[in-house]
Image (cartoon, rainbow, N blue to C red):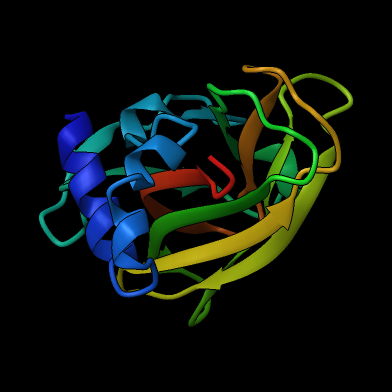
Length: 178
């Protein structure tokens, strides 16, 4: 399975990464990109991974958000970062997403971030992202503000911005300094 995700990531970044660096891109992935590895919180039932041939990797996690929450993080995604990060490391968080059903023509993921995995959940980079109805690779970038141990961080997405169904494909966190 990991080889399939690496192939997906490699294809997505092929045009942007110099040839010499392409051989090393697998070493830069510091999370588990598979939708099966994501934790969704704030819903009564755990969403299921489904097959979807139209997204890279062929799998997506469908998240049915029942409505706008009191806060955008009332429903969210968390995915652990498995490797250590050093101060100054440049990170790229790339993810496949689309909405299946929504109240409007786009869906806002209020916060796409890398943050502490435990309270106080402080993020060192975050950005809101508007997603559309077609599969697309989105990305946000940031620089580590200090050293972090393996497991100290998580990828996070805050999804409770309205009644909507969001499909999430692979999520890649790359440390470009590796």
